[in-house]
Image (cartoon, rainbow, N blue to C red; front, side, top):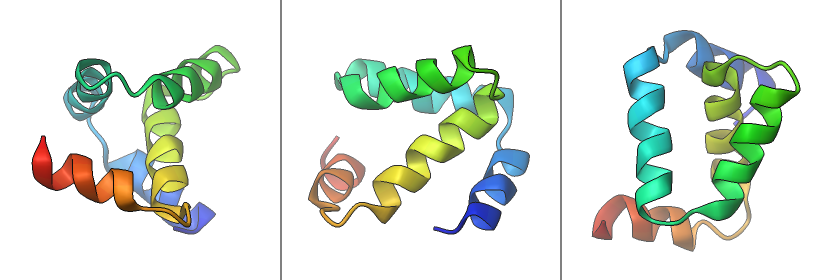
Length: 74
């Protein structure tokens, strides 16, 4: 996912969607995702941009097995 795609996703996310995504991370103990999200928000990113950034990071990771597992098994 490119930077431009990340910003586009951030602009499309609603507050409720961000709450749902972050809540999902809390439910499955995705500690790294939560740490990154909270760090970005504390540094001044909007919640939407921080959420999109974490999603992009997961999407761009070379090992997407965890992402696929969470999408289809939780």
